[in-house]
Length: 231
Ligand code: BV8
Image (tube, rainbow, N blue to C red; front, side, top):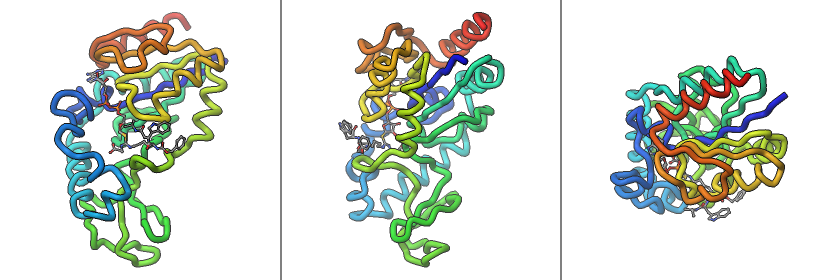
């Protein structure tokens, strides 16, 4: 049974209107990631962090999956093998396109987490610093997002999947953030073939056996069509 592991990043959601991070005009060019995407930043100014994620949650609610998300959902449904998505994205566009086997290694905009007791619940549209945890009532509500310096989610499962993969495909990621940026090496070490589909060469493009560059909404449906006709 052929096993495919697909890593996606902000580039797959770019054509759905969600910002990327490091492109021109990207989120990290407009916000200081140390202020809005670290636990220290949250302690310093929780209101600013909630404002940043409330804006992204609104943006996500107003966006729709694009042809790349739909193509991956079709691959999972029709491919005679295992298809697993590991996404760095915190939006729910893969799920809204119909993908089911999705691990959000950097968390999700739809989740709320209590920084005091660890309780999790569905995030309201707008989160505020003074919101109280439904379990312990502490005013320590944060987005259930993995910030810099925090342990990404599902790591053991991800490493198991990479070790068992026959093919690893990275879509729409610049290869800047670890441990995700090293997944191509983990997969290659385990004998998987590796392919990059990205608007332009990523920082890790030389780690891949093959690479195609262009918009995900064009490249991903083309690649899925090839995979399904090869059977
Ligand atoms: C951790 C929050 C310990 C969610 C984010 C070495 C080993 C381990 C860690 C480190 C290391 N070196 C440094 C570190 C620390 C750090 C790190 O990587 N720093 C970087 C800046 C050097 N990593 C961490 O802190 C991680 N935690 O290491 O814990 C540990 C270590 C190992 C094992 C276990 C534990 C935590 C990282 C998570 C941080 N949280 N965000 C949010 O707010 O969204 S990271 C942030 O960057 C987002 O999650 C985003 O998804 C992620 C990656 O960015 P990309 O998705 O690649 O987006 P980017 O804009 O960069 O690129 C977009 C690409 O798309 C571009 O290439 C562009 O060309 C392309 N594109 C654009 N348009 C299109 C397109 N492609 C196709 N079609 C288009 N239309």
